[in-house]
Length: 106
Length: 232
Image (cartoon, rainbow over all chains, first blue to last red; front, side):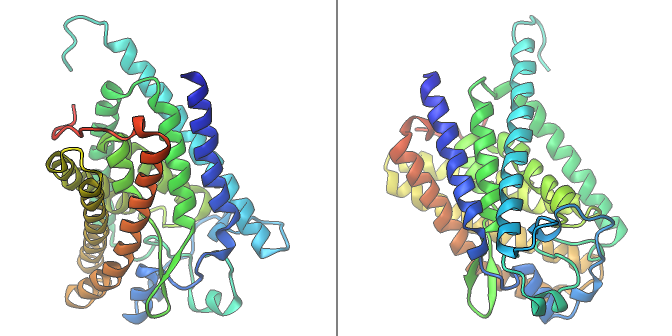
């Protein structure tokens, strides 16, 4: 049971990281909203962000654009996985702690 | 995104995969934050009660997949690309409340770390791509899977329909927000958003069905055999 879980996490994370590695092959065409904004003439309204960390999925200080994109993808996958499993773990634990409390109908 | 060529950078002032800052008026952005906050609060409370211990790694893996898949823009007609939203997929596998938690985290990290989607538009981006997709995706898939009564192809058809509809709803709501913000008239922005995303929705449907097929063949036990009509 535990072993199957490890397999699931490794498999799922592996797929996500594999997609990140291949992300330089993603289409660089504008996406749906960008296309509409350009065609209908309101793309110029977009303001620059107040700060930039890994802006536009290009990891800073990396000369090679493809490598910068792959790195940003890997970093993003790991951050998101940790944040969500952390939140879910805390929620599950809080829910579990509530359950035995009698008369708690909320 | 991905291969950034200089010409693309010139035509696009700010990364605008999701709604950037400047597209939405203050009231629209604010109202979206309020609606999103309500939805996320309800989702956290529900998820809190329904989540088992084994859900945590599942949710983390699902979020990682959705983040990566959202980077993988696929080409559609007319020099345009689209990417997965993932709300329907997450809702089908983990229920709408867990899906809202997952999508909020994905879209939040995209805005905070990757400057994909404006900070002021974060409420709207979570509402459009996370809350609406999770709730609608589940609302369409649950009765479809009930009707399918174990027949996998019918459930997959329901999943495809759910995924396609969530992209339409998300695009329509975005168009509505842009129109109310006086960014573009509804008669202009609604048909063009729905039109482009009718194609992108096919990609969403295909990826959703493919991901569900993968789960069905490798870990059948994770695919809910009977999705409850009302999640509790």
